[in-house]
Image: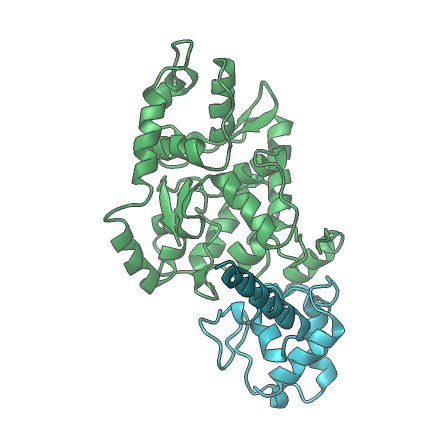
Length: 110
Length: 288
């Protein structure tokens, strides 16, 4: 009888370790409330209940042919537009450079 | 990781806001000349941005902005989730303290139909007195322990007091005392200052982005935002006072919340309630 709870416990530990070890994909980072959380303010294909504070994130390659421009917006849009409500993700250490790059990769598929 | 963001960019931010005014929703609804001028500009900002919303309807927050939410709200109001709090507050209000006195003894008009006059600036103590602070001062003056200012019993008391004041129009005064004007200005400054890891001011959401969606939520307009307090929030599964709203707002933008009845929070409440002068008390309210 006692072996069942122990087994369950081990399963949970393994599962948790596996989740935290794998880096989040660009899409996961964009949807995750604790990370990019882009969906809270932007419509993104494949995301449920998007917000509309910012513009929909579609046709990104055509809108931002220069990748550095898009990276700069995610990193700190207040530099370009001091009035923006968009959080400065890099400046305020919300996202790492790698995470921003993964998000931009994902956005370029939109 | 939490980091407090300095606000030294604010003057530049305001200058740019003034220059581009008209091309994008302004970050400020009003410039600080004096409270009366700020009040007029603040109201005009919201009424011109939402011309279809009746002035008195702003007190209904997100429901004034979204038809779908409004329908849900009408259904919720058939069996209001704050009703239990109103009943409990009424009972508490009538029950004498150990010394035989009651809450009614501490307030003008025995505490009935007075919500519209709170918060007020007390020229004796030189500070803003909110309803929550007045209730706790009343308890302490009568030998009782103060209540948690954010929920439960406190929210029940203010729910009852708001309920008896429904429809009364807010009438917040700035007495001829430089400290009162200073409190109002400090509240205004706090309201427009960006903070927290997410770099939001109160105005970022409730002025600049009012009526817009963050996921399924609709951001309430700042005009009349105090009128429905206290509120039952489904997100909290319970009642909350203005200070509960302020502390959770700060936490949501990843800033460090102040003490629930910190002087600054009381100043913000003073500023915001003044900006909603003339609008009717709608509290207690129900919010998603």
